[in-house]
Structure formats: structure tokens, C-alpha cells
Length: 457
Image (cartoon, rainbow, N blue to C red):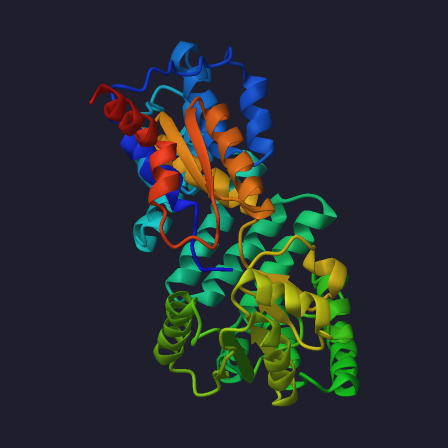
């Protein structure tokens, strides 16, 4: 498959057709507005659609329901990754005459925006102001601690982040929520160097924090040694009988499940550096190496890069080579065909993060397999949302004539129309083509115009 991304085409065509006055297409009428529609869209992950509906609801609602819908619209815009729109909509929301809950919600959203912009200290100040408000619900106090932990982590204060997550636990209910919170803490702690953990253990005064730090130190010092690990964990349990650490962490630590194996010393990076995907592969490689260069930890993992070449079917050979070379974590391959080859042929013995999405669920293949990438339908929806936010309302779609291309075109067109956009034309092309002038002319009806011109002449 050629490394040509069709998804940029609808945006280009939308820009062309939005300014074309000769396209006689009426805009799609929006359905009646309702809170149920907005909430369902949010539950289904259609965040831009939810934001649009919440905004429509706010236009006719009275206070305080109006501000509630406005804050929900900003929240869903952030979930959709639309930072610019979220920032422009949150500032005018007037929460002054309302109770503290609305003030806290606005400050938390402002903090989330600041975090996305990299202004973490300003975000913490907003959260501190929110935390000083009285009569807040446990859900809001939990969110304040969670968002503050993100900022502390970004400011290279991992122990501060853990403290916030420890504080958050008193406000959350339900076994699953507590487990998720503890796993967040655990990932932070086991990523720290042994020397840092030892120092933090010596200065920690909070028994809950010191217990977590001591457990992380046990994980780091006994990684890869099951007998010693089990004995150390049992000793820790006796020393901390009332510690809140749950079995999800302790059990996984003893079983050496993926994500609980302590520190990683060797990482393999599988990239098609000498292929049609070279530009994308080089960008991933450069990002990894830049982060590695910025990491001054002497115990940081060593990264070994494997060029998987132009043939995706050989990605399995490079994967097995990386495992045999002692890799403890593998990142790659990059490219759908290479990822599908790995899914089909590899025996997963180490945690593996694929850089492409496949139709199969990774967990159904191996507990060691993860994938980083959007499903094609979600990717198509994001393109539709970006075009809509940029002000386009009419679009034409140029897509490859393959099952994959038709699947993407259907997903894009469906979501575009749900947002209120119009698909004025669509045209397929062969993946073997190198000259796209004919399908583009057909898409824009240029061929018919040329024929009419010849008849007139």
C-alpha cells in the first residue's frame, strides 16, 4: 500500500467548495435540540457533536442551567481536543452570581486548558483557588486532585503528583475507581530511579506515601526475580497491615504482569526507516532520541533502533531479533500491514506497543500487546470535526477504491452530515494511480464543463 493519506483530501475539497458560489446545495437542517441528544453524543465519544448541542441548549436556557450547559460544552470541546474553541468559549461564562460549584467547575476547566498549553504553574493556582471553595462535592474535590497531579507530574514533581492521588482516594468510591487511581500512582513511582525512591523513602513522613514508595523500591530492586519479589512483598504486607494498596497492584506485582515488572533496561524501536514511510519513521525516531537525550538519569533504558525496511512482511523477523537481543519492551512496528503481520505471526513474550491500529483487539491476542493509534472511523471523524470547526459546511470526498477507503469515506461522510455538513460529491480513485487529475476533475465536474465548452465551440 502506498503511503498516501486520503484523509487530508476532504479538508482540501471542503475549503475549495466552501468558497464556490456555484454549488447549489442547501445546508442540512439541524434536528430539534435536547439534553438527551447531547448526553448520548458525549457517552458515545462524539464530543464535538455534544458540544454543539450543549451550546444550542445554553442559548435558550435560563440561569443556572445556562451556565451548566456552557460549562459542559467547554468540557466536551476539551475532550475533542479543540483547545482554541474551548478557550474562546470559557472566558465569557459568568459564574459570579452562582454557587461555589459553578466557580470550581470553571476553574478546573481553565486549569485543564492551561495544562494543555503548558502553563502548569498557572493551572495549579487555578486549582488551589478551586480547592479553597466551600461545600464542594466529593466528585469535584476528586477532580481537583486528579488535575493537580497532572500539573505536578509535568513540573517534574512526581512525588507531589502521588500525594495528590493519595488525597484523591478519599473522595472516590467504587473498587474500579480506586484501583485505577492506585495504578496511576504505581506507574509514576516505578518509573523513578532507585536512588530517587531511596531518598524519598528516607524523607517521607506520611505512612501511606512511605508505604507506596517502599513498595516501588521493592519492585525496582527485585524485578525479574520472582522468588525474591514474593518474599519482599509478603514482608511489606506484614510491615504495613493497614496500607490501602489493593490486590490489583500487589497481585500483579507478584505475578509480574505487564506494566508491573519494575524498571526497563532495554527498549527496541522497530521503524521502517528505509521505506515509503521514512518521514513518519524518522519523526518517531527523532522524538524518542530527543527524549532520551533530555533524560539525565544514569539508569535510563538503552534504546536500540531496528530498520524494518520497505517490506512489512519482514517486520516479524525484526521483532524476533529484538526479543532475542534482550529487549524488555518493544515499540513498533509502524504501518498497518506490518502491525497485522506481527499480530498474525509473533509470539509475544515482552510488552509490545504497536504504532498502528488494527481491527483486532490487542488484548485478545496477548496480555503483552498494546496499540497506539486511532481506529480508522475515529480518525475520519476527527477530520470531519476539524473541517467543521474551520467553518466549512460543504465538502467533496476523494477516496481510494478499496474496502478500507470506502470504510473511511462512509465514516467521514456520516459524521460530517451529523454535524450538519453537506457532501456535495464523492469520487474514488485507484491506488495504483500516480496522476489524480482525472478523478479530481470528475469530482469537481470539470470534465462536464469541458464537454459543454466543446459543444458550444
